[in-house]
Every structure is written in C-alpha cells, then in structure tokens.
Image (cartoon, rainbow, N blue to C red; front, side):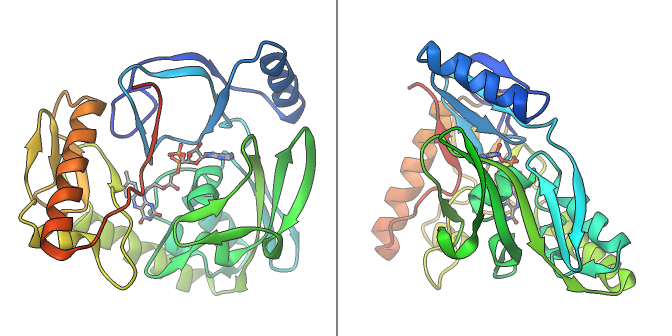
Length: 278
Ligand SMILES: Cc1cc2nc3c(=O)[nH]c(=O)nc-3n(C[C@H](O)[C@H](O)[C@H](O)COP(=O)(O)OP(=O)(O)OC[C@H]3O[C@@H](n4cnc5c(N)ncnc54)[C@H](O)[C@@H]3O)c2cc1C
C-alpha cells in the first residue's frame, strides 16, 4: 500500500481491485461477500496511514469512475474517481463555481466526500446537493438532509460506497474562478510545500483552535521518530523524511498527542484515517 498512499507506508493488501463500472463493482462485491472477504474503498490515498502489515482483504479503487456532467442549471454530477481540480475546471468551463476551495486538495471526489474535505472554513459537503450511494446492494440518491456530517467527517454505514456526488454550484465568471484557483494553488505552494511526502494535516483542528499552534506550543515542531517527522515547515503535517514505517508515524502521533495534552489540556484527534493490520 506504500505505492497507493501519499505517506508511503503500509504493507500489502491481499487484493487490489479496479472495477470498470457499477456492474463490475457489484459483481466484485458479491464475489467478495460469497468468500467473506472484507474490503475498503480508496481514492488516491492522500489521507490514509496504512499500518505495516497491510490490509487483510480487498482494497477497491474507483479510479475508473471518472465521468462528470451537468445535470441541469447549476447542478453538476461527478463520479467518485474524478479529481477535485477537475470538478472545479469542469464547472469553470460552463460558467459555474463556488467550489474553488477544493482546487488544491489532492485526491478524488469519493475521498473528499467521505472526509468532508475543505479549506478556508468551507467543506465540500456544503456545496453538495445529494450523494449517490451504493448501500446494501442498492443504488439510491441521498439528500444531504438525510445524512449526518460535520467538520472533516461524513457518517456513512459500513459497506457504503460513494458512487457520485451532485454539486449545487453558483453562476460564476470563469475568470473569477481562474483567480480563485490561482490564489489557492499559490497559497498551497508557499504553505504546504513541506519537501517530503505527507497526508496534509495529520490532526483535526480542535473547535476554535489551530492544531499546528498547539503542536508548536508543545515544542514538537521537527521532532522525529525513525523516518517520521513533525514537519519543520508546517507543524500539523507529519512527513515521511525517508523510510518511515507506519509504526514510526503511530509513535510520533502518540508523542504529539501526549505533549499537547500536557501543555494545553487538549486531546488532538487524527484527521488521517488509520487502517490495516497492526
Ligand atoms: C499536501 C496535502 C494537502 C492537503 N490539504 C488538504 C486540505 O486543505 N483540506 C482537506 O480536507 N484535506 C487535505 N488533504 C488531505 C486529503 O487530500 C483529503 O482528505 C482528500 O479528500 C483525500 O482524498 P483521496 O481520494 O486521496 O481519499 P483516500 O485518502 O484514498 O480515502 C480517504 C477516506 O475516504 C474513503 N473513501 C474513498 N473513496 C470512497 C468512496 N468512493 N466511497 C466511500 N468511501 C471512500 C476511504 O476509505 C478513506 O476512509 C491534504 C493532503 C495532502 C497530501
């Protein structure tokens, strides 16, 4: 899994499947169910820390689910495997926008929806009209009011797969979107260019506080365990400075949590999803 995750850690998955389309995905899921094989969906692995023994069961990549189209008016529908920036660019071409804040968030619509990815106080689910989910073998659209979500989280049932998201956008001059994209990418180049592989922010920001500030106040900037390091550039980024194992990251995260608890009394919670066998 180190080849499929931006932190570049993790042993192998038993199976790595790339279904062609919905029918293929359904066949795959029933094949796995008949054999009692567990599975998990993956986007581009930009928010995943896979443990060193890897993943028992199947990892399912929806990279072939990459269609995007306009439904009507300001509604556009993007399948789970579409890259975030492609959503913004597609909308821009037809004079729609308001979702420029996802331009520089690496990954796919599926991953962004599950994480309620966002920036500058906005989350992708706020721009979402409804989700198309594969749940218990049936495909149905779920309006956002039917779902439980919040900061960097969407509660799904075990076994749910996001097939597509339909966004309700705003009419926007393509030039204004261009400017939004440029600003976002520029800001990220200056702030997020940490020089090593990372998964972006490792911890969620506690209510009303910035995790990086708490980590700095605890003196943890630059601290290393094996190849895992609290970035010198952005202290809420943990980087793989070379040959880090998932165990290195787990130990470093535990140290950070303990230090922040001791200095500020706040318990940090990982934003990165930690999966796989210990
Ligand atoms: C440099 C850098 C900067 C970043 N900046 C930001 C930022 O500003 N804001 C932000 O929110 N995040 C940021 N991230 C984190 C990451 O980009 C986001 O969380 C992104 O949404 C992950 O997308 P992905 O496709 O790689 O998902 P993955 O990491 O592959 O998966 C994330 C989770 O979603 C689940 N999932 C994936 N696809 C589906 C599906 N189709 N159905 C159901 N579940 C699914 C996976 O099982 C997993 O639990 C950053 C990461 C990096 C490396």
